[in-house]
Image (cartoon, rainbow, N blue to C red):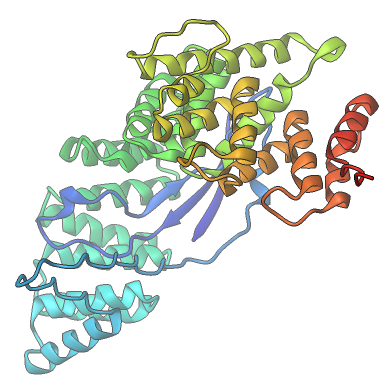
Length: 443
């Protein structure tokens, strides 16, 4: 992976160019959603300061391993099963056999180049693409494949030449325009990068990655409102990175109306997809919202209210539910109706948003399970508790102290239980230790 640190206004971006696993055949470019990309790691605002971009390790250009294929389902009796996909080495062998018989064959040569590229042999792939072009100089896909491989070598000038030729031969190649946008960006030509991404989107309006990259370069051009619109398009398509940055835009009010509620909403979606930056953003806001008493500030009150509003907003996803009491939660209502599969993820969202009722329900589900529908001691609940306890959440620390002291679902560990109680009010510690103490033997 190639990394470049760029600062612009209040945004600090760590740019990563990642090469796709393989280029697609001619005519299939409108199906692509992953390609050489510009990754962003961090946005700064006056109140939200996650770890600096410098903390991200530098990496060399790499090619990710081929995705594993799911195991085929058994076919009904008498129906032949689907063929097992070939391994990369088998693909290489087949392509080389075909080329031995017909050295100027186009598809085997391109297949050989793509497979070498997938396996990390970029130089070998470049040689095969150039050989293909000697036999077939007007094949747009060969120029595109060669340009992609040259990007992995950071040979931007030669890669641009190949991509431009690919686009000249076939102007509908979405990937060619998208990759040219990436190269323009890396060379500091922001206006040309914007035009290239816009052309890719003209050809494929639902190209989420292009919306995301265009949003980033528009932001760098100072066009905050246009940038937010592009990020929203990518976020609505489910792109976690776009959801994270759109949350940042709402947090700071850049290009959109400032809203901590909307920031939490988008960060939560990115967090559920496993994006670490979204987790960090929510953690810092939760810590601010958790401040109580004399230490509470205007900012901490606003954060607490935003999390409450987020939980209230979850009711809109279930218009069939009636909220009979203000303190009632969506998750507990679904649970009471026997809709356990729907209730569990909602309870988790509510608990992460500091809802005490949802938290208490999850703790009870961990300890007791649910009437044969859910076994006790679920690891996913324990992970939630450990995550929020590490953030300093007192209810989670108390719950874990009880779990480890009693050995609920794991080996008893009194020392670890006491570690969760450090710094907590003495009365609460005493009460919990009395609760978990073994009963004296009966005379």
